[in-house]
Amino acid sequence: MAGYDPQRMRNRPAPAADRPSPVDALLDAKPLLDVEIDPSGDAIVHTDHSDIEMTPGGDDVIVTTRDARVEVRADADEVIVETAGEQIHIDTSIHPNSSVVTAADSNRSKLLIGAALGAVVILLLLMLGRRKR
Amino acid sequence: MENLHSGPILAIVNQKGGVGKTTVTLGLASAAAQRNFRVLVVDLDPQANATSGLGVWEPSTTVDTALEFDRPGCASSLAIDSAWALPTPPKLLASTPALSAREPQLANDPVGAQDRLQLALENHGFDLVVIDCPPSLGLLTINGLFAAEQALIVTEPGAWASDGVANVQQTIARISARRNGKPNVAGIAVNRLGRTRDAHYWHTMLLEQYGDAVFAPVHLRAAVAEASAQSLPIHGLGNRPGASDASAEFDALLDAVMPQLSRANAPTSGI
Image (cartoon, rainbow over the protein chains, first blue to last red):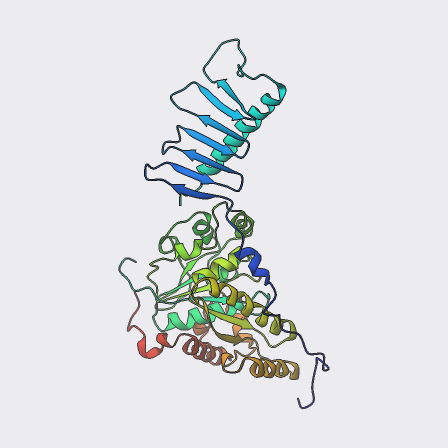
């Protein structure tokens, strides 16, 4: 044993305490969602780019982003989209032989409507499996 | 399990693999159960070696359920019996290979998932909970360290394993700083100390670097490997040569890490 040195004087460095540790990235990762419950029982989900308000039954949903606001009301047969200074009403009542979109005035608006509705569906699916904190 | 005293939670940890975390987990569980303490083993390693080491091959429930959602206090109901023939056999929160798919889901969980196991172990009602952490730094290990009050670093006398001690100490320090000092490092367990001069060199290096934090070693013995192979507790190997020596070393390790679980404090009989 005496004199045995497998390191041959090349002593191993210890991790520097003043440098980021690999665990920091995991610990500092912010939740993608912050769920707030207001006194009336409504859930407000805050993300980096949007706020989603839901009534306890999930009947009314309001999604607000920097560029748009989408309202889905249980007591109205329409979805209201406000974006780029215009208000778009989407008729969700059943009309045989008619288009779903009734008040879009440009292709850009149709694209926005599609994207906004897609976002609502994705966020609703996301919310279904999550505990309200 | 209601109204029962909930004892300490100990995480067995090292980001380095192959150092014997599962061996030490089961050795400590065997020592505590032999003294009639109620022990829960939490197997967080998707390889599920602690699960099979406790004689369980097809668990009906697993720790994956506890990690899926926030389920406060669910550990007691998810714990299953081990197959160890001891007066008070340990219970098990079993692992499954499917746990490897849980880790990326935890990392991407929209509301954060660092404390799922901690919530699951609320009011656990056991005298000792031992968490066998996986050999990597991810959300499973972080869940284990968030749940634990103390962390026992396991290493073996070798260059890379010694590097692992410094790395995991840093990891624990970062977590502890965010959790009001928990977990604290209970100490360093040197596992599989052999008779080679290289093993003695690295053991000496650990002692020089970490001093009193290094507990008396667990020596390399065939009996320990045979206990694993037969899914038996080391204290249940009978007269197998080396078994009593290995049992005594795990007894000493338990006394050093958890003095409150000494033989003097042991319950007189099992559940």
